[in-house]
Structures are given as C-alpha cells and as structure tokens.
Length: 317
Image (tube, rainbow, N blue to C red):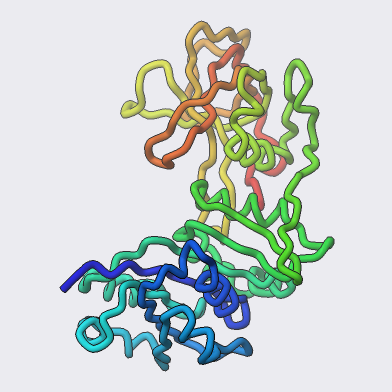
C-alpha cells in the first residue's frame, strides 16, 4: 500500500489526550489539508465536534478494545478512507505490545509518541501503577504534564522521566494551558571551584548535567560512586555512578557518565576494581552520544580515592 505516518497519544483516562489532539489539529503547521484518521480507544469527557473535524479534514473511528486493531483493519482503512496520517488515542491501561505488533505488520510508521499526564492525579497513578507509567515514559518522545499548579513537583517528575529515558522532552502546563517554569533550585553551588555533590543529591546532579551539559562544561565535580568497568570497555575508562530505582526492585538502572583515567592521581588506590566505591574528582566536558542522539557529559578524572558506600546506596526519583 503506502507508508502511513502515525502519531501515538498515550495516557490514562482523562489525561488530556483528546484535548492535545484537537489542539494539534488546529495548529497551522499541522492543519495543512492532509486527511487525518483518529483511532480512539476510549470515550472521555472531551469529545470531537463535527465542525472541528470538517475544518481539519479529519475523522474518528472508535475502537472498543486493542483486539479491534488488526492488520486487516488498517489495510481496510487505507483502501476505504485513504488517510494521509493517523493519530492514535491509546489508553494507558493497554499493553503497548499489541499495538506495536500491528505497526510491524502494516504500513504504519510511528513518527512520534506523546504521553499525557494529569498532574493532579499523577501521584496516585505513580503509587499504584508505576510500572505502566515507566513503560510509557521509556517510549515517549515527549511527555506533557497538564493541569499543573504551584504545588506540582516538576523537578521530581522530570528527573524520574529522564532517568528512564534521557532523550524524552518533558513539558508542564497549567490548567489554563500556560507553560510552567521549570527552573530548579540546585542543592549545590554550580559556581563553586569544585561542585561537591552530596550522596543524596547524586540523582539531581546526574539529570541536570544531562539536561544542561553546556552549563557544566569545564567545571570540576566531586561525588561518590560505584565503579563499573569490564574487559569490553576501552582501556583507561570507567563509569562511576549509582544504581537508581525507577520503578521497583526489578527495574533498577545504573546511571553514570563515562570517565577517562588519563593522569589520574590517588593516595588510596593502586588499581580500580569493578564495583568498588570511590570518591571521584573530575573535570566535565561534553561529547555527542550517538546512542542518545544528544550531547552528554564526559568526565576526565583528576583524583580517585577509595570510599565507603553511602548509607543509602540506591538513588530514588
């Protein structure tokens, strides 16, 4: 048939998917006359009105369950409706594998995955359905928290998402649609000659350095971390970092930056052993990371000393 661009809008019921789809369709950059097919897997409070659909050359097909989305269904839609693109309004309670199986079998090509979150109920969902949230965050190109207010912990949410998906963009909107400021108060002084990162602040530093590598360019940092090294890694390179719990005990991720050991000094170590705890003093520079398609911090160690593990070895977001 023909390649069919698909935009996946994914989130729990009443998380703002329909509103975002309608807003996107109304934008001049998107409303270019192409025919848009909306596949909706739920009926929330927000509905699509006939006038808006006509103006944007769009139509909606309501699906009752993921079982209704099949290879034959997509082929039939292409033959009968000839859409130029598809918007998929996908319920966060559904497993994504069913949708991806259909994508693999058809001409659907997912161009962008957008996850919507109602900030007023986010804590409840994170407490009771964290694994579903993490699955969405891992695949997202963009995460939008809506209905935010001054009590919304934007820093905590942003760090949690970046820990599982560094490439995801994260945005926060108030109930009236205005974008929220995301300036975070750091627990250390970035202008210090040596930025000393406390054990409990490692996650904050790791995410902020990832998000704003240009701010840390040429800075010197000191932190405690566990060494990761293996025979597969280049000579003279380690990754000092921490283990972070992003979802549950079965979903612990090691987070750290590549560290070069050229001309590193130490009073307490003759050799650096895998899984050993150390205090690292290093200079930060930035380098393009092909895996994440973005510039990431790279450390050059100045001094590495043996250290005791922190009281709390895991980083929590």
